[in-house]
Image (cartoon, rainbow, N blue to C red; front, top):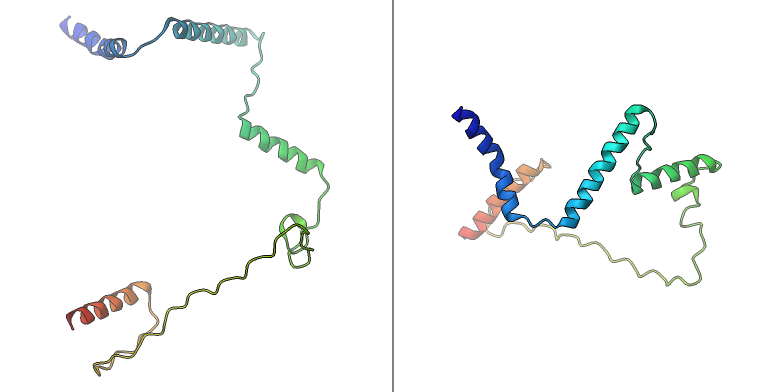
Length: 147
């Protein structure tokens, strides 16, 4: 008997904490009761065959479905080199109100590594994987730091 009471107390304890800490207004309780009653009525009508549930589409899904229908209705356009079947940008005429494009900046190029100054012949670097290059760079940095 006491085990059943302990189980009941354990199940009711979160409800007790919620009631003490949450502030629920009467309007919120009434709105929730209305939604529950409406849901129960709809479920009963559906079970009785009087109400057919309408598919619920999210706004993004609705836009997707509309765009698919529009694509089906449009005639197929030939696919060109540009986006959406248009001519490539080099063949298009520039817009009259468009500002001229700024000149492109050149990419930064790392300087070539210099030969060792202390006369030590450094092993010729073989093109390897990234890990071997990182290890070699770490060894060089330690050597320079100790000098």
